[in-house]
Length: 342
Ligand SMILES: [Zn+2]
Image (cartoon, rainbow, N blue to C red; front, side, top):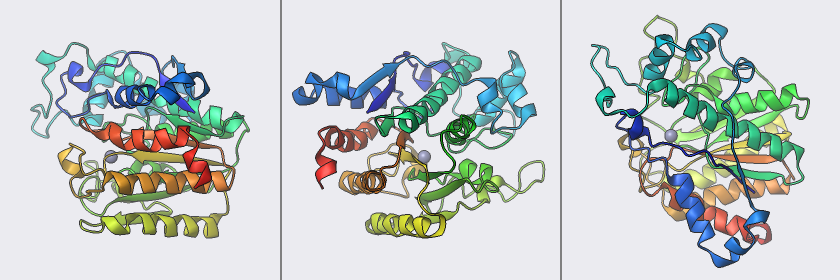
C-alpha cells in the first residue's frame, strides 16, 4: 500500500532556498501509477491519502534533546536559527548560502511545519504496517536520516525514522527494528541516535566519500562529530563499484540476520539519490542505473516478504526531475503483485 500526504506541499524554492528538491517526485510517481489503466481501476486497494498533522513535541522528545526541541519548536527566531543550520543557509562569515530571503514566499517557520508534517508520515506508515492487516507500506515522504540528537543537518530537522520506531515501541507494538538505509548519503544521524540502543539495528549503504563523511572530525563546539559514529553495518561504495552494490547489500542483510536475528519491523530509507540521473551535485559519486536500483529495492522487499515482516519504505534523497523513475518502476511491479511471484 502507498501512503500519501494530501496536504499541498510547497517547493523548497518557495522558501527562498536554491536546492534542487522539486517537491514533486511523490506527485510524479503517483501520476505515473495512476496513468496505468489497470492500477487506476483499483486504486482504492493500494492508495491511502491522508492529511497528517506535524509531529508532536511528545513524539520528537522520544529521540531529541529537550533543549533543542524547545528551540526548534519556538515561535521566535530561535527556530529560524535551527532551520538555517538544518538547511545550511548561512556561511561561517554570516553571508547566505543558496538562500535569498527576498525571494521567499513563506518564512522558515512554515518550512519547519512542512518538514514536521512530512516526518509525521513516517510514524503513520510504521503504525499502519505494524497494526496490519497490510504489512507493506510505502510512504511518499520522510527519510530524514541526518537529524542528530541536538541539531538538524542535511535538510533534516528531526530524525523521523528513529521517532517512528520509538513511537511504535512506546505503544507496545514492536520490540526491535532495523533501519536499512540505501540513500546515497550515510545514515549518520540514525547511527548516532541508536548507537546505544540495542533494540534498533542499522545498516547503511552509501557513497564512500563526500558528505557527510567529508566533515571535520569535531563540531564547532569541540565535541566529536556524530556523523562518524558507525552504523551496525556500514557498506561504503566507491566510484566504479556500482555493480557490487546489490551483492554487497545482500551479504550485509545476511550478516545482520546472523548477528541480530529477525526484527519485528523493517524500515527502509529508500533513497533515489544513488541514481545516475539524480541532480544534486554531491551525489555524483554514485551512479547507479535504474535497473540496479530496481534490483536493490526488490531484494529488500523480498527479504521482508520472506520473513512476513511489517515493513515501511520511505522516500529519501529526491533531487531533480528524474527521481520518480526509480520509485515508479519498483511500485508498478509491486502493486501488480509481480514481485510476489519472483
Ligand atoms: Zn541522500
